[in-house]
Length: 336
Ligand SMILES: [Mg+2]
Image (spheres, rainbow, N blue to C red):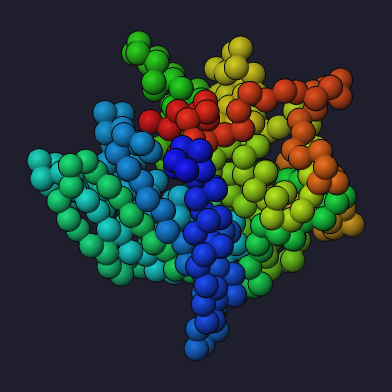
């Protein structure tokens, strides 16, 4: 079988099936982060690989932003478990002609977000490479029981933080050949693409209050990541298109694409989580203390229906592709 037939997620589950769980591993391969026991308690571990030409293009990304984003995407996975990040290692494959000032800017971006989030950069590795390769690993504390993807039940309400689609729309604007009009809306979308905010406070609070029963961060597009959560939990989901949280910038620039990027775009790094219906009023009460809005977008249903999106007249919307898979070639979201 070719990798393009198996796909990224098929490959992950293949590795998962053939890898022993290991001693002291509470939650292994297949969630946002692993959860392991150590002598004094337990911790969370997550890693991400960013490749030039696949995940980023140096022609429209500053090295400072790239440093920020490389750490942010890992912190987002810790947030999705309800954890508190603590240590990071950063390993780079670097083209030998890259100016040292670019490397300095990269680490400035890393350090700025690390100091904001209380993360210590504790090591890594460097090597020469043909194109820039960034591998970040983050270790986090689990002061509250981590929230896996598998705890959702039929009847749970589905929430998302922040707004969806901004990052993918920004990427679409960057990929258009003509020069970008740099107005406020465009600047906002670009900052969402280059400088995503990991939702650490919300994630930890949802774990502390035991409000989220299943959680995932939206990195590959809402439908795809919701699909992962539903699959892990053995439920289906119904999403209401008109309830999707869209930023004013998105609304003004998405034009005929409508909610397409909000549903299937990638790199939002918002949190998607499920709450028992009886806990709705408790969630409503903590909402006001948060620095980011929470939006109710749908409900968990019986697993038979998969993930469905309904328009304002309750008609199902047909989706051509669900999101991004690094090995399959049918995903329409280009992650250049
Ligand atoms: Mg994730």
